[in-house]
Length: 119
Image (cartoon, rainbow, N blue to C red; front, side, top):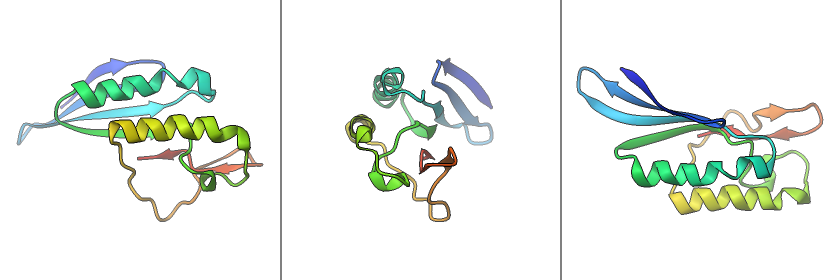
């Protein structure tokens, strides 16, 4: 059984209950805004989920942000603040990344390749 718990402009959160065992976990699906300033409210809400929602949690995301310059095919020094925001959220709230071995980049605009969809 799946129940929708929360919807915002950048995410929706569901509670999933396996009916045969009654095991529960929370799944959050994120699509972060493209612009850094518009994306900023997302980080505290991720902290709210981690800090106040009991049980197992999974965040499936496209934060539209990267953790390392190597996750983008071209260097762009303006990205430092974006990397710092995303890295800070991940570190502060103890989020860990699932390793993806088959795909290096998950998005392109035909000029830049980027790894923005994971977890």
